[in-house]
Structure formats: C-alpha cells, structure tokens
Image 1 (cartoon, rainbow, N blue to C red):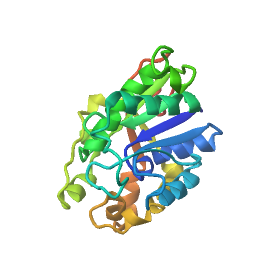
Image 2: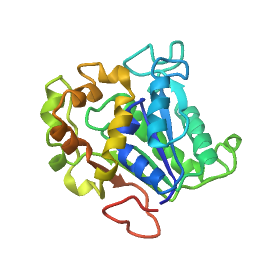
Image 3: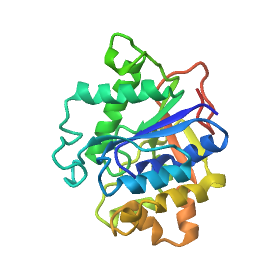
Image 4: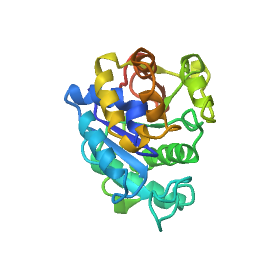
Length: 252
C-alpha cells in the first residue's frame, strides 16, 4: 500500500470522508498522516482529533491552525482559512507534504464535500496548488527539498451514492452537493475497516453530541442504516499517474 496523507478542513473530516482508506493503508503497513487546516493545537477539538488519529493509525495531529469560517472559537486571534493569504497557506502545506513525503494525497472535492462549507472549498484549492508546488524546487524553497506525490484524490459523493445522507442533511437545514456519477473514478468498499472508522468518528465527542453535526446525526441512526452510509468511500483522481488506476482502491 502506498503512503497516504489526507488534507482536510476540520477535525472529523478525516474520519468521515477517508477513515476507511486511512485505516486500510495503515493496516497494510503504509505510512498515513492527516493535515487539518483549521482549529488551533490548543483548541477543544485538538485532543479529540488526536484520539481519532490514534484509532486510525495516522500519527499525531498536523494542525495548520487557521480559524474556522463559521466558528471563531477554533483559533481565536488567528486569520480564518478563507481570509489567509493564499501563497502563505500553500507554503505551509507544502512544508507538510515535503516533510511527510506521501505517495498519495487526499483532500476535499471542488464543491465542498456535500455541504459546500467554505473551508472545504478553500482546502481543496490550497491542496491542489500545494501538491503541484511541492515538487518544484523553485517554489517555497524554505519548506524543504522538493517532493512530488504520485497521485491526488478528492473525496466526494456521487449523485447516485448520496442515499440516506440526502434527507438526513436536508432535515437539519444543510446543503447536499453531490457530483455527477462519471466524476467519481474510485469507490472503495471499506467494510472490513468500518468498525475502525466508526470508532474514529466517535472520538470526535463534541460533534457526536451536536444535533446538526454529521457525527451526531450518524450516532442517532440504527446501526444498519449507519453501516450503509459509511461503508463506501468515493474519490475522484485529479492527477495522472503511471497507470490508469484501479477502480476499487487508491493507487499511485
């Protein structure tokens, strides 16, 4: 299994959107890690993120420390991710990529992963640019020697795969932004790792306790319905690799 670095906007995004593939790659002996764009290391959600990553085998949190677009308690006194200078944010992520040296990077999709959260959209944009910049020695030389990941994937949801999530999210007043089915290049059945993924989601205790947060919504569902929602993870390959790619797993 190739090494895998996930780059997501908030604590819990990693578990909800790619917890299965993170657990799968870790179980196969691959290096895995997670970069989280918002929330500060001394915030209330940082310990929960650490617990979730321990469950997934993804190491210690790597927090960029930007403020959440909608929650000022995420990183008081720090700029919101959506307001931060683009090149500076790219440089900070380039440093993380060059330090970790992943073969695969996973991030949000262009529409903001179902709900269209502005932090999701901005993280997608920053990651696309950072993955390219990481391989170019003349860009951000202060961030270390260049490293080019072999593949970049966006976690996404096809229109045909929204299923139960649609009415659940609409029921709490949230958007449901899926992509056309042909946009999805890879669908991973993570059933063997679903229990690990669910344990990681539950580690985000504050979100589980909230009525409108997806971990809380999932926690209130019957087990069979929850299993149907979390057992498949969908991705769009955004970079060309040496092969076309396997439709059932992430490849370099």
